[in-house]
Image (cartoon, rainbow, N blue to C red):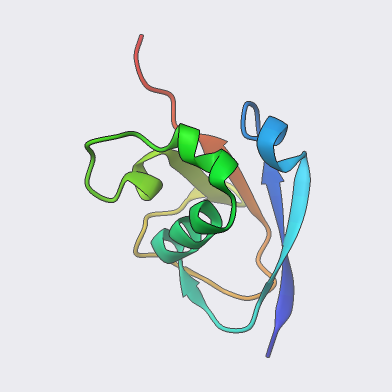
Length: 91
């Protein structure tokens, strides 16, 4: 059954997506697949995707469901609220 998921974007991603967006999910989706979908739908997210990295879309972001850090193989249920942050690289 389709449900609306709320995504909160944190700096600097909020400059591309806004502070919060919603997403209609019809079926459960793997977190890695969701990130690939979001990057395909919004070219502005591409600048946060590292180059020369396998599964780069997944490597460029941290996704939280509540206080749990999700792995690419974790399943996101329709209606889940998520926080998405840019993975920090460098020192």
